[in-house]
Image 1 (tube, rainbow, N blue to C red):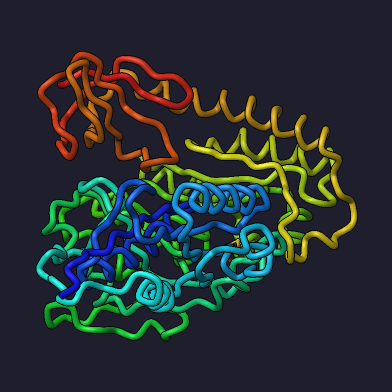
Image 2: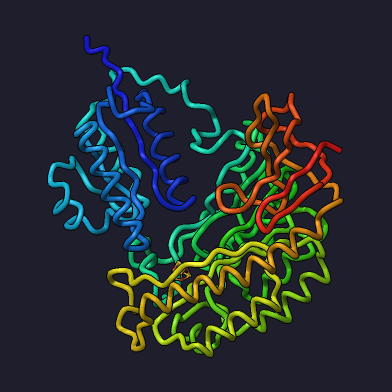
Length: 438
Ligand code: SF4
């Protein structure tokens, strides 16, 4: 009898949404008795979950496929770049299979075809909450797939399709299982979190016998009852987002909101075809801060978008100064193959993009530092991510994992990842905090 237990390696690139896809794939495979291989050597096949959002991400994906081909040679490609099978096969003709984003079944079928499952699946090996690639104390919770917008720089809707929301009860039961498995922080993700449920007419589904509407307010309110940190990502400032702020002020969910503004100039936003770009944003931010003074606002921006003039750019810098956002990322515009923005007139030369990027980062660093320095002397909650004999590193309510800063607890020993502690902030720069146990 064949007793070989096949081992599968997985390389997960790209955004947290892709990470959730990877987790689903490995959960299915483990349920069928496959083992996971942390290295290329000895793996019967390697899955590379790619990102294809920007050309630089595509290049990184092709490099990762190349490395897996060299080190192992039996490679199954999935994820966003999978929609461009021709480009993958042109660079790596030997890959075993190529599937697109969100195609768990096809990936699992490809694995079956090239590394058949063991004869007796031992399903008991899968913990009830599924397998996660993130540390045990935080987990991403995907509430929907796809997007109904058509931002001119983005090809996600053509790759991932229209908005498809999960029923609220499904999301909540998954969240509850994660919390029972030890997760202390749930990171709500999607392409457009504020639009959650629009496609299913906000239909209610029963969670412990109580109907919960597929609406971001109802979902956030219900998630807030689980007693863990709930952090919202990719929220567009539609008017109903204002209803979330009292939940944040009351700490039912974290006072943290991640809104990808991308620009401030009305002309550029129009050319970008951004959702909710006419929503009096500065007034609303001021109002949100009045209601929830501890609110952390994170955002990303693109500089050097086609047609962006020096005047547009200065408008953005003035807006940033007034908005006083806490956490900001900035990208130089990169044409993505297939995006409508590529045909817009007024391409900005690379050296001007570079120069604007530096001006933007310098301006925002000063704002971020002001926002951070005011925390010196505050007592805050810190969720520990890493700990060793020299101290511990954690995050405050203002810091999402991977993308925001850290809280360094130098010299504080005896802590464990997943611990929640109170600490007093003793130092800050524009990005991180230093604190000691309170
Ligand atoms: S909202 Fe715009 S940027 Fe975000 S996924 Fe949809 S089309 Fe892309």
